[in-house]
Image 1 (cartoon, rainbow, N blue to C red):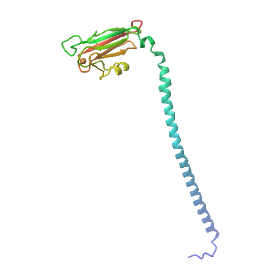
Image 2 (cartoon, helix red, strand yellow):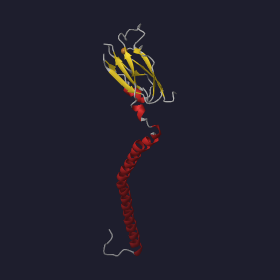
Image 3 (tube, rainbow, N blue to C red):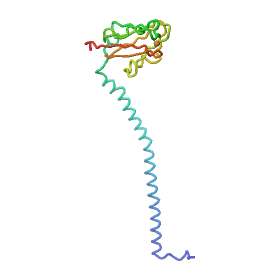
Image 4 (cartoon, rainbow, N blue to C red):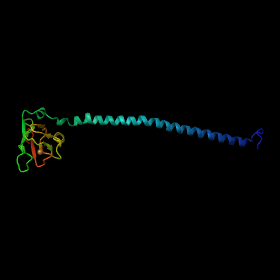
Length: 189
Ligand SMILES: [Cu+2]
């Protein structure tokens, strides 16, 4: 054992100072690393929140500002939405009979936008029937003329067509019952 009262040779003392400095610096750099890591962590929360807010803003802008203005040129004219006239299609009695030629009457009427593009189906049959858009129909018609669009006797279903085209439909429980509405633009195309 070294006698503690004997002073250390100068070289050994310097060596200890070096060790101390090394340890102190090591602790200091560890602390700094931890501080850096902590500040990175405290930033993560607000940055995620900011990202979510920014994404929401973009979605809201796209849906409520960009889309309506992009579709603005295709705004539906008032006379298309509430035309003066309408066409009636009857679902006649006995429509479920396979050998009965008439079910949707008239089977293929032509309507004109702004004139009579409102179509009213009226059931005269005590059997439930549907007016169901064929697959691939435009969304507005497909949504309204759904698979569950059941009509009992004296029930009506009205749909206002707002763009030209051929709209095919059928009866869900009796798929041999088929009809088409031909919608013309004002210019007759
Ligand atoms: Cu039917």
